[in-house]
Length: 354
Image 1 (cartoon, one colour):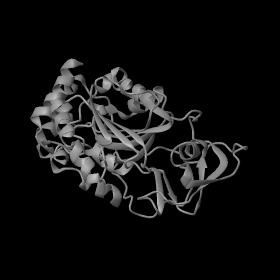
Image 2: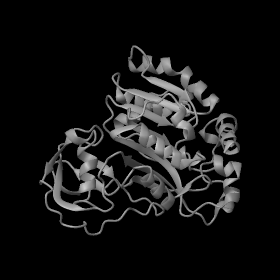
Image 3: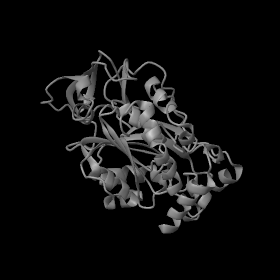
Image 4: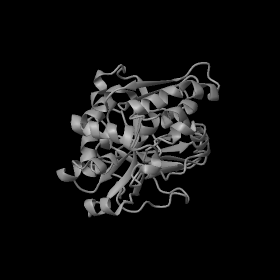
């Protein structure tokens, strides 16, 4: 464990000086954020942004006033963007184990607070290993949101990271994160390769193992928000990992009790009232649930809980009392994250749950 942690510290503290040094597109982001998120990211200091190595957009909607934790915060790009989005009544804590990255983040806290018009910084950076979150000064059941951006794959005890995230979240809170996954379990000789590991490839979980680990930690019904196949830029690295396929996935895990193992139909629907910034016309819960404002949208029991037992409740009305069970919604299936991502710019689906 210590050997691989040393590899990660060296790779992100010394080997990489900026994102231009990367050999794959695993630790890069292609997502186009909503305008208000783009503005928050653009407000981050250039020296911080240059050391960004995320693989997705780990910034969800409806953030004002939230208490947020960033696992593997690096130089703080996402922390500072979130600090602007949560506003002066919210707070963002970043955890990282690399001194060089933390030095950059802490050096820019006051600058960002001044830029955002805050009297004092609403950020905090804690040094620590994600595998040892339970040993850090972090209060259980205290965070509304936990994010992570292409870091969990670098952890040596991934089940413990998910267990601790569940422990730290408030009921109704969520873990919203981007990471890299593989379509099969990675051979040990590739895991031991420091470049492949540092490039967020050989530490990637097999997708089915991820789902099992998440559910064992208490996160029932994992949801995929977006996904894309990864390209290996360096031909030598590509030759080493073939034929393994990799995908970057942004996912959300809700801390909710009573979720079921299938998409059960209780004859209920929701109506999105609008009001979520960046999702004025269509609310996107996940890749299978794009809910058009003003339209009656049938939902399963799990989806209803994700909307009405979380921070999203004020934006929805519910239709139906849920007293009658009609079985499983037909055609329910999770997306194949290792296929090419579908174009999400078209109209929202007209069907209901799934």
